[in-house]
Image 1 (cartoon, helix red, strand yellow):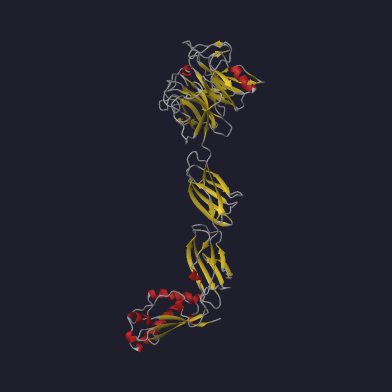
Image 2: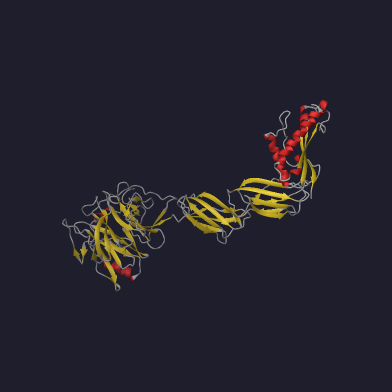
Length: 608
């Protein structure tokens, strides 16, 4: 904006020859010139509904109008691109021989505030030093016509008031003035307004006003204040600032980024209201324009941000009607569902952290923690989710030759609650975990197998649910041995050698651990009776070896009897050195002597 227009506001700005700040690809605003700019000055454009009214000195709207001495061109008048009678007639009504400035329109379009030199009813009003300062007027549209101008009670011939901006709630009229008592230059003020009635006048204070000039206020739909200032901390010339409204007052104004601002004059920022869009108009004398000052369209390129994606199963089929709960770091929860194409979308904050719980009756409940990384121009963070089937067992009991065992009773207990009872088939048993279990849950599982003619078995283990799909049980735990007499059970269950202290038969703690395995085996197989036989090597007398082995066998059997339901399932017998594995004692190595010193558990009876 050039010096000549600032002069009429009693302000002085210096033009600058600095290079224009360029707009890079990542700018969050686009700024493009309007199609109504002329070769002279066009600025201070304002929306009247969806049409535009702006200020220009491209040619007088009043015949034989005087010229502005600063430029040698016409005084500033209002122009419009509208073909609506109400707007066209407004321009015709307001324009005079002297300067008119930007307008501010009420929501219903029937009240319009504007700036003009102190020229009222064709009468010039001069200040003490012979100046026609700026003043604010308004007109009303009644019965199809615009009224004569009405003065706003802030006018004074000794200083300028201008750039009216009506607040969104229409309770205040904001304006700029160099009236005495401000903070320097021109300050921003507001006055209470109630449909023609006026209240208190208020300076907006030092968070907004500086020792420089603050001009061209505009109030957005949500009450934020936009204005121009030539504060020395800016980019250069006039810069556009934004001050957010908070608890009825304004925070300190923050300079807006390029390309809204440049190193030249940027001012008269307005938003198009009530459209749901974030765009508007601004004025600037930046290079490469059509004239001295030009009007530009601006648009905020940052779109509302969202997380979106598609939910499928492990086979690639879409999952409709899945429920997703998104919880941010503040505990705020949003609930969405996938549509028929398995797609979801939820509003989010860029670079926000979210915990996602997802649930569907046919799939394993799951959760994820994500950070929605995105720059300001990225509109979506895409997060696709694959749902797994509920965790499941495929249990296929087989005999020692790998032949499937049919009609074996299988009982599954989880956390002391029976979950399944059934008979095995040729394909085995497929069992899916109850849907109450979620990823991360700890479960204690017992699987009980029994079938007449086979040794029964209980498989126990603890697990943490980590993934859906198949839970693998080691194959060796699903191999079952036929219950036959003379079968040595150490070939079925993992038994370590049982040791005794020298010449003693007391059960040591390490021996007790092995005997406990036998107890479990007998309790699982109540139809089995076994002999616990104890053997020695050939060293020592036959009598002492027989006595010692018998005491050890009966001591171990007595220990086992205390842990089983039917004590008659086991008896102990010592054989001394009568049944050696290695009979050539004179030539036995220490390892062979150790193999002769053994304890055996042999099935002696299988009951129906």
